[in-house]
Image (cartoon, rainbow, N blue to C red; front, side, top):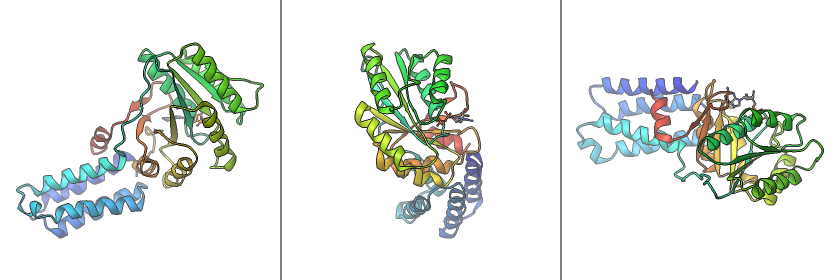
Length: 296
Ligand code: GDP
């Protein structure tokens, strides 16, 4: 079930509730059954769905609700808040500041949209007047430097990389040192991806992080991977200190569950979502507008 279908199903369940002549426990149970079923089909983790059900039920059982003139509204609001809670860990996202020389390291599996997202973020902050540079510390995949070079050139972003140096830690250190010396505001370091959550990948990420001491680490996750989101996000969280999340491919067949699982597994905020292959297809993420949009 894609994201807008999930929203449509939640809306339809709420409309059914609106048509009920009495809002009793049976009606609320039917509503929750339908909504929780839709969330599970959208790959939201079963524990989180259960928690949402319990929270809404607890509210409905309160005496205030029994006395409330507008039970439907109270239930609708509770549900909206619960959905927001699923995509908002309540942590203020880190943001780079002009003149502060920040280093941001990108991590994620190959194909997740990491390099594309590096360029999108670089272009975003360049438009805000910052001096931004990109470093290619991916020596694992042949062609990685060429791809970053091409993306960066298209966006007119200065870049650093090497065709000869095989050690990604060395390249990351050199690139960061060069851009720092040249007084760049934001230095974005793209790392290697690999196909699976392999031990070598995590060891490499840890070494790069130890060498460049990033101010923030961005975990890039493909929004279309379904139930795999939970274990993937957990695996990355164990190895690196994930500060922010970018969920990509939200323009395609993404379900809401991937984003929700990534937040739950890492406790980190989603900062942007990727909405296409183009450099400017990047939307700032904010929980309430996201949920409003999902519900149409
Ligand atoms: P990396 O291996 O993680 O660096 O992934 P890439 O940046 O090379 O992206 C893999 C593929 O996903 C490319 O074809 C990108 O154009 C595509 N891609 C990345 N982000 C998005 C997105 O937000 N939406 C869509 N539709 N495609 C994306």
